Image (cartoon, rainbow, N blue to C red; front, top):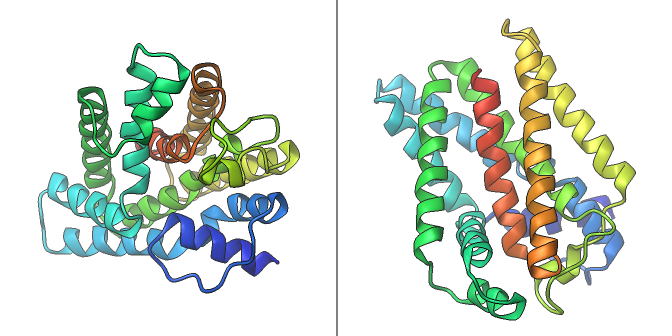
Length: 253
């Protein structure tokens, strides 16, 4: 069943072929969300490789960052970015819950969503380009990409309902037990802190990066539950992009 969880996570979060997946129930969904950081390791490795190769060709830092961001969008079908734009549009609309969810369901992007994408992508590209100035920095970028997916355990923790009666949110919302989500985040904070410490920058920035991302996502989930009545697949994508950006800022300190 562990491999089924990995396949579900890989098939949902990346373009990697995942093979046959059994019917999704809450235990399987919980395993997929818990194993999400491991399921995206190939994508994280590709991020590090692209960053390092671009640096070897002496490309400008912003170009390096944009290449990595573009590769991540390609490797995830840009689903997380789409979720970010839709979530911001829904939260920013002045309509009631039903109309806000309908805005999120539509395929178009409003001005608030566009601004959110520009800011998030700009920050990610600039930070990645600055970090990936050598092989060690490129590997750190890949590690942060993997760790950022742990945020899904927070969005899908028990007690957080789905905003709709159909869609990805229904399948995975409320599936992850609190203790499991806590353990995953302790591992993420410990990993980032240990890596930063081993590389001579000290553990504080890594631990703070994980904690800041956790707080930001908890606030996002709280707001979405109040505004939409729960979370959706779009909210999960938004959480991943926000966590990735905050972690990059944290490890850059």
